Length: 62
Image (cartoon, rainbow, N blue to C red; front, top):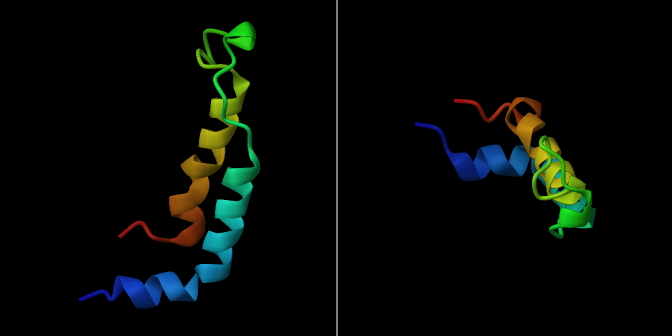
């Protein structure tokens, strides 16, 4: 059985770095700059983009 606490501790520095990156992005809704691709504006899209790569970057894809 996988001990997820131990697995998380192994990648703690990367997780904290990713969290800092995500928190630094302004994710306020910006309808003045919305497009079909970014209906809530560019901020929320920038916030989500780093999340899409996290599972592969941290190898937590079990």
